[in-house]
Image (cartoon, rainbow, N blue to C red; front, top):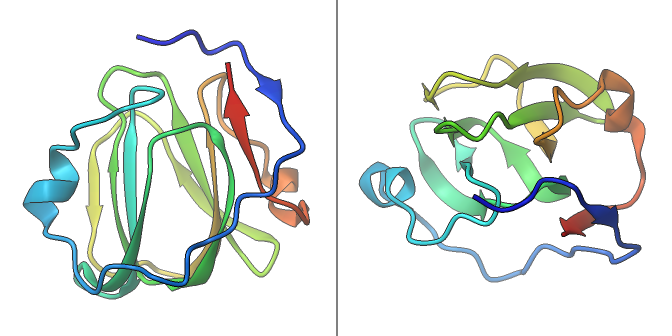
Length: 133
């Protein structure tokens, strides 16, 4: 498992304009590469449909759309994900694998952290970053 000590780089992470129109839950549940020991897939529409983005590194990510469903797989990483909507905290997940087919609030930003739960205040950050250790 990779080291979780990391340095924040001032690198902006942009969301590609080309996204898949559907990712199967089977593929999302069994990724081939895990940078920080967890896996997150967010979908633009309920029931794991529509455009999607995959995340497996610690960081703050502006998704580029309002996500309505997601799959969170932390394995034994000790990592957590915070969900944000319009710079407001709308919840988090840590230890339990979660298949959320219909999020209670659509979200447009995720923050992944392996040193505890990302703070609710981090939802109002204005830039995106990825952490490299």
